Length: 428
Image (cartoon, one colour):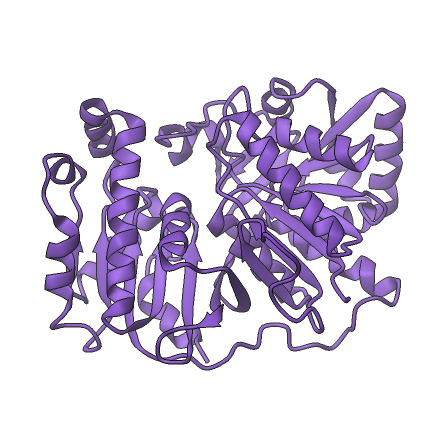
């Protein structure tokens, strides 16, 4: 058994995000879709880290806790030496959770009295300074996340946000400490513990900071944060002689088939990506109001796609502006609007694969979760990075043509404007 690190991610794109970062840092990584019912569904030889992808970010807190604890038990049985709870770099949550309740439940199960919370991802413009989360040059509360349809983020102070969600005391390791390196960070951890703190927000504005934070976390049973902190964890295993230094961790098997993009996210980044692709590729729009009125857009989309599959990448999207999303939610309700779109896009993805699509990009965490479930995907091998936080992956199981399916599961907020157009060049 070579598995060293066990990760629990609260959505599907977040899981591929952290898995991709671990691969980038030299850990051979497998992502599992949900908690397996039995033992390892793959050969553990040559696997250093396992990421379990849940769909728990917006579930009721008690459900998120139960699912996360089940994932932890499975990872413990797999022999993992350290555990990592991964959530979004924009700290997507509500005043009641789910980040805080899940973190405290995992701490309790591991008998851990202290852990950190560090969602920073500087490569994608997510930085923390004096406990405040920035998206690019804007405070979180002034970014597009303030309009998120499910978890609008209107308070950028992470100490304050997390303190509302937990029973324990939340402290801060600020930038002045972090810039002095791992020993200073570790000393601050000890001081916070003496002050009765159970969790600490940790500032980070660069990858160098993340590496120092990772070094300070070597002896923590549980680490929580975004995917950026993953850069600093593998080196701890190398220092102990448990992880090889020179490994091609991002190698994937060859894939084939036609190419398509499914976009469900309404983030500003995905809006720009959809606009760029629409200028160069055929596209089909999925309108939630039409779905609600009984239109069979799944059949319409597949009939539109059938004669074009294989000629060039196709785009199917439900992406819309925040104003449009709010108008739709006002008519249908938040939950119904989201589920209608997710179910339709998932059914379209399943139909596209049946038509011969073998390389598929999916944008949006909720959409990605629905798509992988519809496709019956049990797990993924993690490959090369397309943009920070978004790797290509291949399914553990082969498709109908005997080759695995290539999937890129993209967080709505990630990727350059030409992401959908350039991604194919990174496949083997």
